[in-house]
Image (cartoon, rainbow, N blue to C red; front, side, top):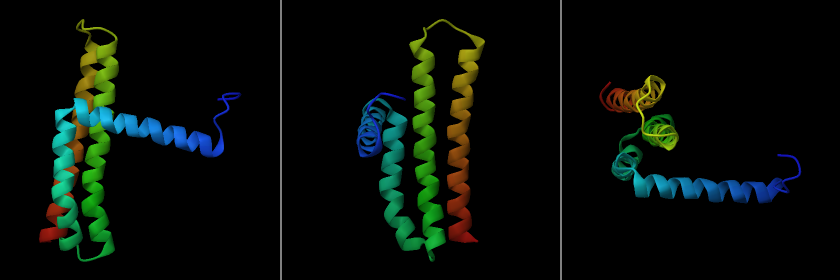
Length: 120
């Protein structure tokens, strides 16, 4: 944004602050996000212990972090759709369903990675 005065380190600091606000909002307002944070707390030490290589550890941890990322995007889409009113609209329903499908696929991805790394 030209002329905003937010360049360099100032922009990075402000962006970090906005990111922290988003994480706090997701944790406070979204039950699914809190559950997935708990999953990360449980699986992070397991990944470090059970992963035999750096790549295995990265895959195990990364799959759970990806789930958290997709959950935040899902919540953002739902909040945006809800912001524009409560009336039923085909496109609103489709957007929410597709965002939910993204979370489901991230869960399948995490489960597949954990199964493949630990048992094959």
